[in-house]
Amino acid sequence: MIRILFLMTFLFLVLSTRGQSSKADIIIYGGTSAGIAGAIQSSRMGKSVILIEPSNRIGGLTTGGLGQTDIGNKQVIGGISREFYEHIKAYYDNPENWKWQEKEDYKDGGQTRSAEKENAMWTFEPSAALAAYESMISKERITLIYNQRLDRKNGVLQKEGRIQSITMESGAIFSGDVFIDATYEGDLMAGAGVTYTIGRESNSQYGETLNGVQTSFINTTISGKVSRNAYYHNFVAQVDPFVKKGDPESGLLPYVNQKPGVEGERDTKIQAYCFRMCLTDVPENRIPFKKPKEYRERDYELLFRNYEARTGDIQDMYSYGSSLLPWINSAMPNRKTDTNNKFGFSTDFIGANYAYPEASYAERQQIVEAHRTYQQGLMWTLANHPRIPVEVRTEASKWGTTKDEFDREDGWQQQLYIREARRMISDYVMTQHNCEGLRVPKDPIGLGAYGMDSHNVQRYVDANGFVKNEGNVEAHGFKPYPISYASIVPKKEECENLIVPVCLSATHIAFGSIRMEPVFMVLGQSAATAAALAIDSHLSVQEISFETLQKKLLQDGQRIR
Image (cartoon, rainbow, N blue to C red):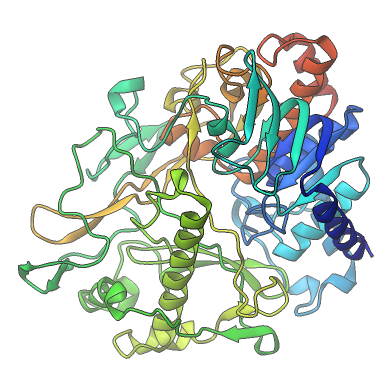
């Protein structure tokens, strides 16, 4: 019934908003996890709120396949974010929601393991996340608009340092007192003329050690624990990068650079994207991997060579892990997975996303489809190609996309994993020093707890003439740390009524820790709380009383220290 009501509301709102003008106290652009939490909090604070989602599905990555919740420490998650995970548990407490597996047969693990008698659950199917969000929204006064994209060239109307309204490509206009950009791309922020950056800062800019180009196999000690950079998710020894092995004149294979850049220096490249696939091994619910029409065998030549260059038993082909498959299958309920990148050649389409943050909508869609084609081709290759070891083909063939999760007939989702795009530069930039507890803001609005994490950024030819991946950093071992309110609001002279809880002000490596969906929900709630207080006090979002904000956050269950 909830789903039917949502579809009816969707059709009504799309038809009624074309060319129309709508007004609310708070306008949120982006129906990501942060946007949803912000809309719920806005409603609870008695504010009218319009939540605008550019696509036809809310929830972003949380409903798009990322069911393995990366947190670091579950105790730091409070407020609406924790409510969401409580809804997930309630969903799976209903026997009707266990179709492909008995509840007692499902085992979660690691940091996402639900403790005995815990009232939250931290792993879930995309459909379960969507049901939870729809249930939470249905209890609030939220106007939800689907399929409305910002006119990125001329759609942000500003006057005297404040956004007056935003206009969609359809001509629909939305006016408000405070605006929240909850997109993964930061399109509203960019349209408002707020300063931002793309790519990796040099280590020297903020006195960091884990930023910039990272080719060296170094050990970093944090809180007594050793993290190894440029170590994981790399090729085995002596994988040739040239079209014809041993012949540099033949050119490089796709997406391999000749040189990586200077160690620790800035570049404009970003960590790789992928689809977080929802797979299943249940025959009745499985769609076998299919060879895409645009399949290019050359795109997987490095994969073939990586297997062929192994020495010893296939289980020892990498310096860690024992899986035959170059992916991580994290178990979700109903014999499904959240499948992520693993090893040197996997689901991350390294080097194919550099243009995405600034690309037009049409260009972005081309990039998304290129990623889908690459990943579909990868999965078919692993399951069928004769140059793949038979052990791998046998295991890969057991899996396929699911029939019952997404709208596409092939079982693939529409949401690409945008690990980072634009990042705002405000008066406070979150850095590696914040993550390590060496720098503590005076205005905390939430806590980060996951390790500083960057997927690979590029492939290059090393000094010996072989291919290597670059950009992977996995630095763990520090305690939860506070995130500054000043890092989610622009400089006052740039915009007085905009809050940016996703593309916040952080360096590449600090953002690698903050960029977790539970934290985005926390920041979305805090952003909406600040927006409501700014409206009530007739102040800019930069001028509100932090003492008042802090009191309200704590009252509403946020954990900020």
